[in-house]
Length: 347
Image (cartoon, rainbow, N blue to C red; front, top):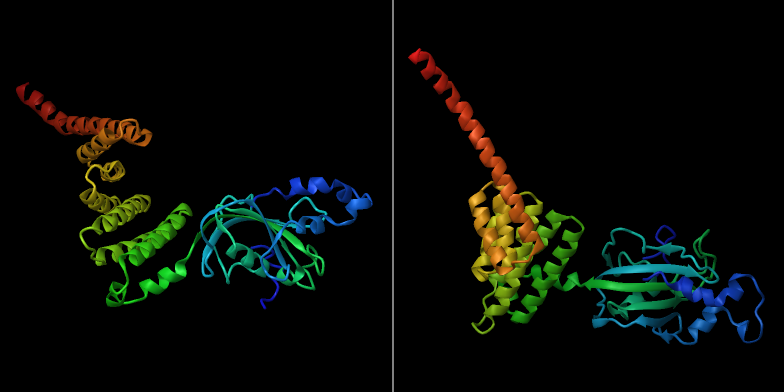
């Protein structure tokens, strides 16, 4: 049995338990229970909750259904959560108000046994409410001063997303020959997982780490040959990774590499507006204005009303005007002395 969570890490969404607690205002205001109100709020709530631990130690009430597969045991999850004590309408722990959420790995970052069991019962997008008895929460000692001994706690959890990197990490550790023994769908799934991890890291502004994940995905896809009838699946997956890499290198201020990946994407889809746009951005950073214009005009042709493309063309026009003005000024300075010398000679 897993040990209770350390006090330094109380939680592991939604912030709606206060609305539920308002229905128990009699208890919150210190008024004595009467008649059918003799049960506590948690006791009343538990009667309509599902037992997912088998001993009623972890009870669940689904607020909003999710979609897709259940969370896998080795997954890293992206969640919002709030933890409540009975008779309190404010959470003792919550990440609802954090600007940036982080991935948490089951078995490592999730310290509440009840929360881990609860997450394993959830699907992406699901919002659920859980009751954890002390055995599945903070144990007989509690976590002073916030959590009293032998306390049942309520957590409201929203599963925003989850990624299973264990399968991907094991696959990438195999040799190329061993990987070739797996079906194409396996390779595509692993590559997609790597790309999703890269996307998460990118959103965290961890561009170097994102680049590593994207490159792992690209190596897998480059190395895998597929029958002609399935090659389009590989090319589609490659295109997405190449676009990600191009954007990542723009963020890393390496436009030459960004252009290279953008042009590789155009080999797959020569009319891809996003690839044309990335190439145009890269050329603009490299002050190759004519090439930048060619790419951006082609992108605009594919998506005439794209706000970003049109703004980039305006930026290019502004940069080019500044460039030509500086060129004229430099030429004037270069040839002005020659004109003065000619005038003196004539005199």
